[in-house]
Length: 198
Image (cartoon, rainbow, N blue to C red; front, side):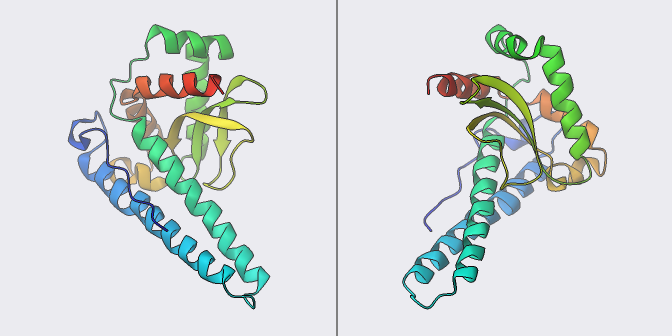
């Protein structure tokens, strides 16, 4: 129960198409709320382990909540870390993605389409490197707790309504456009290199 929030690595007032108010609210309320929640759950799990009479079904419920909160913390940290850039992928990133998807444009089209399908609801779009298949794939994720097996997230887009509603209401497609204008491709490249080295 000793997790601390990671600070933003960019100035939220300098993003294109995503307001400082939106990013600050998202970081302070949703992300930091998950950090606090994870700390609380871990503290309760420690206390429950010390109690031999603690019901297994209640312990399982705490473990389920731990899974959910851990996923939220990790995915939010990856999301904020891959924002703050120019949105312009370098030749190395474009080539790596093109090798996996046929072209960079085909990859982007699919990534955007998955995001549009999650609009108005909740979930994540993740470009991930699957350590088992050794391939880059775009993944649809309904929530924080269910991700693709053996996969390292390379690029993460939050599609929960809190990530865009304040700026765009129900217009999720406009948020997706803004997200792409702010991708920090250097972070994406570093994650891919790290995943391939595993």
